[in-house]
Image (cartoon, rainbow, N blue to C red):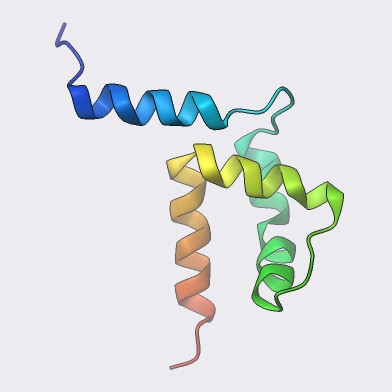
Amino acid sequence: MMEPTREQLVILAEQLAETAAEEIDCEAVLSCVSAYLEIAEASKTLPPELDAVAQHLKVCPECLEEYQALVRALAPE
């Protein structure tokens, strides 16, 4: 088994520091990411039920990638 690199350990430590006591899973995030995007793009204050989405996007690279792909797909040309 390969030992993790220093960079990988730093990333893991940063993600652990961002982890909240209550987290939602990827499926829950992806089910409401379009609502999150709409509100975030309008620069409105997030309702409390979407705070967990923002938190999840901080610690989940896969969901963040999906979110960014949605942003790019909806961006005007």
